[in-house]
Length: 318
Image (cartoon, rainbow, N blue to C red):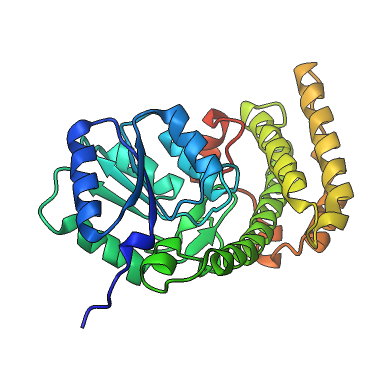
């Protein structure tokens, strides 16, 4: 017997501009019992609602704005709103390989093609309630675990069971206070895991810089990209480390950041950097951030090296 779902407790935010999609969503959600439904076709208003509201379910059209993928990634990384575990369902009218991959990469829970048959949305929401995927954390991704197999050059990461506000309200009838405590506790676990993944990336970048120097490639665009990535990774660590067990390691992190900045400045002046000066700090990084020994001795895999010079400086990659 299917459990009774109390959708009238669920607060839904919709970000859709297409009137046909909006009508299909509103009518289905109303039929299910949802009464607390807010909607907008404005990306600015959507971001404001996410930042200000305690939402249990977010449904967004991927065609709403080119920035929708970055917005979802910001939610997952704790940079927008108060809940990185907010269930997010994407809707697309014109799916392409690129748009589907972008939706997966930013951390949506589900992606639905419109139009759909009767009962399709109901079933997908029930699946999200009953069997939400656990999250995984890497240096570039936080979100549902969709790995079929480990990619070359990547290290195993442990999936994390995360709060599910949709289930908490529609099935478990959990109080706002209990849900908030669960979110806060799990967010701290996720943040510590993210710091470790970023620290692994810093060590691998130092390894890669040393390899570049040994190959006589210390002044290449790839070496410069490694330094740029090191600066963004250390900045992210410092932003996240305050109040955690890794706060005492902030001094080492700042020293790596300072030397990486000088090395990049030297490159701009035409002077080849010496990555060897980073090795003692890399060893301290390994100890203070508890970097996995299996990661400590390797550089970046080939497919990431090929992408590195073209990536936005704010992205992380390994």
